[in-house]
Amino acid sequence: MAVKRTRKKTTVKIDENEIEEKQNLESISNENNTIEAKNDAPKEKREYVIYDVETEFKLKEIFSKDNKIIIGPPRLTRFEKARITGARSLQLSLGAPTLIKIPSELTDTIMIAKYELDKKTLPISIRRILPNGLYQDIPIDWTIK
Image (cartoon, rainbow, N blue to C red; front, side, top):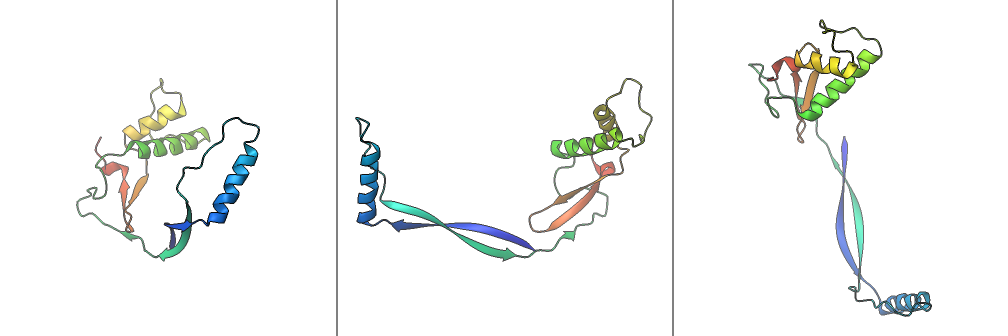
């Protein structure tokens, strides 16, 4: 269950007494200065009221018949690539075996993770979720290079 918090603007008028007190305080604080600030701001005070609204939605998976990507672009986004590369690089730095023969010039774990991602050898799926709760799990094999 998700809770959504919204804010509503309300305006409250300030009494004349409050305005006079505020101006007196300003003049007292400005006695040492030669220039006094004049209050030309509107005589309204804004308050925000917070409402707790409970909206309930359930996740529902969308299945594709032809192994096509229905939600989002047909390629991995740069954020998805960065997340996969970072996670795989961490695995490699902690001693995980490589899933493909790596060329000898690739020595950095980030470069190895990028190479494995380009060759589509990683058994990782991307879950793309829509705001209404529909989602699709997308294996890396389905993406366009």
